[in-house]
Length: 245
Image (tube, one colour):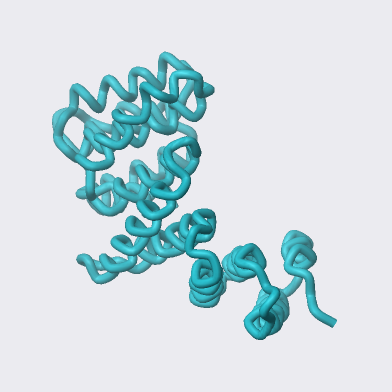
């Protein structure tokens, strides 16, 4: 009897053994490959289950098949981009995984060409991908371009975009613009911890102030991330992402 992928995702939350769950999804994936009636959405569900089981290589294969069956399926392009970015964050050493980052950016651009900028999550994901890839100017331009059209967004979404924008300006060396973005985050929410974290990153990168002054207002996890950045260096947003992870 074939295994429903949604059932497998439910099993995951119940703590079922990863190897068993991954094996079941793999058998289901093989069944789908031999079916002419299998939809692109079925393969995306498989990819999500593979990723939940820690099988990223298989998740990428399932995404590839979803896109092969429906080249306009932008949700599969986005999920593949997220997988590739995860690979880039974990494994890149001196540009060794640059191809993964470039492929992720390409997938995001294709998705945007199909879906447009109506999906805030899609635009936000693309901006973060640019930030991780070190394309700071492109990142800032994307966020600055879309923010005026998102004037009806809730504060949390705007704050996320401002954080991305502020970080891009930090690594471009444009501290005033970075500070303006982080200040706007505080206007939206005076207790926003990531606004303070953004200021701390700016101080650390510029070397013009002691970032430890911001630590008192940070929760334990962000404070630990800041200490890691001080110890290991903060030469790119990729370093920030790794410290946060």
